[in-house]
Length: 75
Image (cartoon, rainbow, N blue to C red; front, top):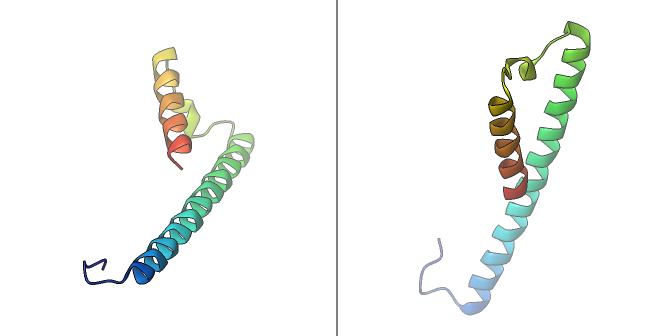
């Protein structure tokens, strides 16, 4: 907890630790998303379909791409 009684050095140290944790978490999420994408691609190749087969229209595709773009850009 960052209480007002923390010294500036302790506060800066805490911020640095949290920033490092956030960076590591973001990297892990990007890696997991990449692995999921690769697994879905393998599934699609073997089964002839996959999660993306649920895209039925251009509107669905646009919404999906917007969602993925926002997900990636936020990490």
